[in-house]
Amino acid sequence: MSAAPEPGWVPKLVALDIDGTLLRWVEGAGMTHADVAPAVRDAVRRAQDAGAHVVLASGRSPHGMTPVADLLDLHAGPDGEIVPVWVVASNGAVVFRYPPLEVVHEETFDARAAVAAVLEEHPGALVGVEERGRGYRVNRPFPDGELSGEMIPTPLEEMVAEPVSRVIIRDPEATAEDFVALAGKLGLHGTDYVVGWTAWMDLAPVGVSKASGLQLVCDRLGVSAEDALAIGDGRNDLEMLAWAGRGVAMGQAIEEVRAAADDVTAPVDEDGAAVELGRYF
Image (cartoon, rainbow, N blue to C red; front, side, top):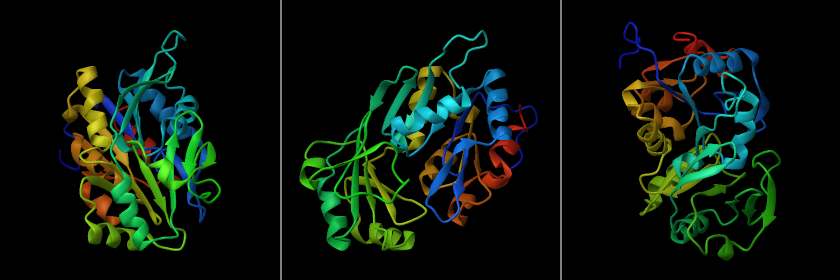
């Protein structure tokens, strides 16, 4: 689709990233505020009330996404009844409905070789694996606010002994550019990866992304990707923005993300998601 939506086009599904799209970044803290701006919340509710399927799509684990669904009141039906919504978590590795939290699909992989390869280059890096419903198993504590839920100290070998849906690797002493170069150098065969705003790398099963998770949701709902609007701001949104009929980057996104999108909206601090949704709802 071109940068300007075709006259009369209205999305049937709206895929929304969370951090940096719905939630504003805390300056210099590597984390986002816990509240959705009123203008953004109202715009999301208008989209849902108009009949669009609103799907949260994030690198967060499921327990880190349900509070945002609650903030947006996504599960409130027109007559006050509870209507479970679709959510794409862990960069597409986990797809669930909520409430209650019901995992519909999960992709796992053997992360041992990839984790060992990264730690050989960054031996001091922090490693985290989701412990569903509690938080994360970690080899050492992550900086405050970077992980949701409890941090559970666990020997590294035990953390990756069984297949997992996602592994987080974080090196507070490195930069995002260091991790981009590292991933290119290692190749990480059999594993996909995404580098975040900082020296933060998500390892995932090959072929799994927000786009693959959203396609599963579309298949269940009988909606085409061409009828989807996706809004995001990070490298983990690249596949999603390319997949959707209309992919929109947030104004503060890095150039790689902006270039991959059909259009660019205002930054998160200026309620860019609400600006884009206001085109249709």
